[in-house]
Image (cartoon, rainbow over all chains, first blue to last red; front, top):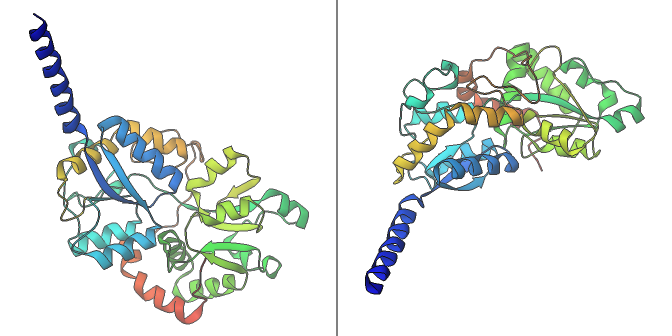
Length: 244
Length: 79
C-alpha cells in the first residue's frame, strides 16, 4: 500500500514537472514603450499566457537601427512596441513573419496590416508639456500654437527628442513637415531649433526633465504624461491648436 | 511583429492573439494610449486628440532623406 502511495506521489510530481516545462516558455523581444509600460505589458503577457518576455528597452529609433544592423538574423523573436515606420520597413524588407490573427477580427484596419506583418497595439501622440511652477514664475502662459515655440523668450527652455535616435521625434518632424509643407516646415524646425536647449535620445525624456523643473517646456510623447501626473509632477499638458 | 528566424513561433502567435483582445486595450487605455479596441482613455477622456493628417508610409520612406537634411541644417548631438 505504502509503495503504491509513493508511486502515485512520484507520478504526480513528475506530471507537475512536465506540465511546468510545457508552459515555461520565454521569448526575447525588443520593446520600445517606456520602461514602466514595457514592464506592465510583459507582466500582462506572463499572467495571461505563462510566457516570459525577456525584454530589451530601446527607443523606437534605436530598435529600427538595430533591426537594420541585424537583418536577417535577428537577436529577438518579436518587436513589441515600435514606431509605425519600423512596421512599414519590416514589411517592405521581408523581416516579419506574417500571421493573420483571428483575435484581431473587428479591429479598425488602421491598427493592423492586412497580411499580418504588423499590429498596432496602441497609438501614442506627441504633446506639449510645461512645468507649472516654472511657467508661473516666468509669468508665461502655455503656448497655444506650435509656432509660439519659436518666440525668442523660450530660448534654452524647450526640450524635444532627436529624430536621429527617436522614432517619436521622427513622427514629430514628419508631422511639422506635413502641417506646414516641406519649405515652411523646415523653416519652422530651424526656428524652433534656436530655442531647443538640447535634443534627448528618447521620445519620453522631456516629460521627466520638464516635470523635474529643469526646463519649462517639452515636446514629448504622451505615453508617460498620465503616469507622471499621477506621480505628482507639476506638469501641464496640451495639444496646440494645429493638432498632433 | 514576429521576426523572421524565430524558433518560438507558437509563443509569438499566442502573444499577438492576446494583444488583440479587449483586456489588453483596457490596460493600455488606462495608461493613456489610444487603443485598437474602444476603451476609456485615462489621459484624453472621451475626446481624442485632433490629428494632423499623415501618410505613414511616406513618413517611413522619407526618414533617411529627412535625417540627411537634419544633419545639414541642425545640431546632431543628443543626450
